[in-house]
Image (tube, rainbow, N blue to C red; front, side):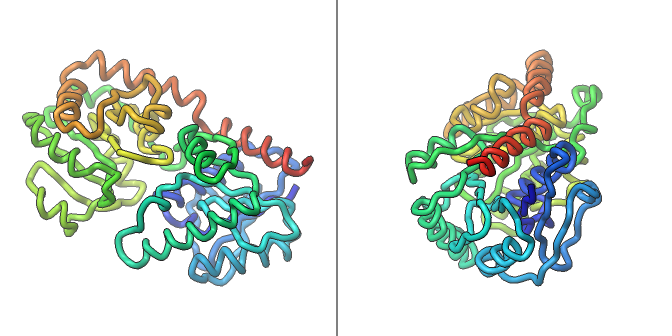
Length: 356
């Protein structure tokens, strides 16, 4: 079985790029021997060493803006390589789908509710909306990342989805766990947020100020110090490094005492799994999909309550037994969210597509 995967974003360490890295890593480690995996990447893409393998064939092609890449390059490669299946992992899919069976990963439908920030995100969301119409009228097989996203997709466009939880095994966070964290004098609270309103970063900063935890620092990943929000709240105990490389992420998780991820809406919630993998207690939203992904392995709060968030921060830092229990349950949660599990589910979907 020859499977072509769109690897356009494989060079990006976060977001959809992280998803496709985890997907390919899982197939590299666990794919059946009769699978021939081909990944299409733009020429000049720097592949991380952990994705290089004899089991994965990388085909380079001239880099174009993504809509051109997806609408013309991917169908050309499907035809030229005689692929049996084409997996499009970024919410969208070619309009003209011939000579192969297609599967698309739809992570969420947040782009339906609002435009982005700036012309680039605005254009991207308009493109996603247009392609969603194509998916609705000519349905491919749909994969998604949570039961909550599956429900949203069903309600919105009437399609059923195969739910597969995304692991986080490509960064090295499993080396972060340390019993020495709990005795550190300075406490580090790590928030993976951003400028988008649904990331809830303003409330996180306000809750941190309200908690008033002596000898603590808040690090806000995903927001640069030049952003409007950062300029409003910048202080010696509140740090805005923007996005950082994988090595720095590992360093931050190694130092973190709490991971804070109280988003208002998401398709999945990969930072929760990152916290579990790194052995860091997680504070997250009590609404799906965050509550779905976390199960009973995280401390859940109302993401719209600054007071409740601040109380959760103080509790996880002061109650050592609670923090230990959260970490233990997070480790147990990884028994069902890992590369072997997602590869098993993907393999079943691919085989069912071929036999349909």
